[in-house]
Length: 381
Length: 149
Image (cartoon, rainbow over the protein chains, first blue to last red):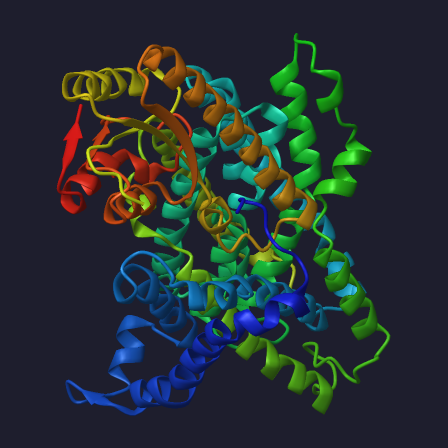
């Protein structure tokens, strides 16, 4: 037994079936029975009170069910029989993100490019500098500071995982960085829809805010769909995710920058030294290429009209893809909830928690203020 | 396996396991009992990094390999620490067991591979996930014949 992962989707499939059945069954029950019931139930004399007050939709309900499975129903650990199926939720979300490419055209992405690069790039650099400064101020271990710098600035766990080997981070350091990022991300994932509705943000403003301000990518996705579960051009998820993908693309560059910072003035061992090109090959998330291919296919009309604002309505194929996406994200996010282990998160603490909270909260609030300031200049796609 | 009389001690190769190791050794010598040193090789990391769907496959696996390397080094340090501490004690052996630390130690005791378990308050924190901070407390809830040092 080892901590390496088995690969090969087809090989894993038979063992994954029980877990998959639980994920799918949960989402079917939520979407076909629970959510419609909540929409129609009359509570305190008001129809749909549960939805209006709690802002719960199938996405948040799915994540909550995933959380309950792991932390309550199964007592803190997914049973072996379901574990492999829950692992496949990663594949669902990746597939959903690739299909999300059907919401954009190349023209829309080019139109958005300068603003996204300015906002995302600015926040990535700001967060890295802030963590490096705070790390020095609080006397945090240098490799821990490196991991936290990228985890707080790009996309949480993925960035921590990509950075740790390059800065010789200890296993326990990475574990604390991950717990901090996930804990903060879960908090923002649940409160952001409330704040967004309270401030009467529209989808464009909300998507730009959470896409910039939330630390972890999975939680950006969940927060956007929790605000507006519709998947179509111009909805919160289409805005937040394009922002988020810009961040994900920057992972290899940020790993390179933090590695250079970490080894400054020291001789990096020969076998460990990696060029930017090597990092791009190793750390670049390939599914982003799938997303871009989908954007290209949509732009050339491979699926019919994309239903972009101001254009002809979406074709039947595009509508079908969007319907699938809702199911795929819903199922994937039940799985994501199933990976949130409260026992681990409760133990996060010390300087990493302090630094993570300061940087995370600053970024979250600053992104909101900035979006409100430039609300009339945000580029619609 | 019949571990009647055996004293098991959780060892991680760090200063955190020096006191429990000394206590276990004292008990073993006083009672002329066999001593079993245990390092738990945590297999929960892939699960812990969770739904990390943004990572490139190479980055994810590279990270898991990197952590495995650290755990292997820690296991070796634990073995050396145990061998050095138990030199001269005839009935001492060391084992690396794969699994989740709490569950693995509880299973070990449930399978009667040892009669008494000795653990430190900070054992495995040197290379562990945040939940090992409460390992001693969690063991106290589930293992009857336990000594926390």
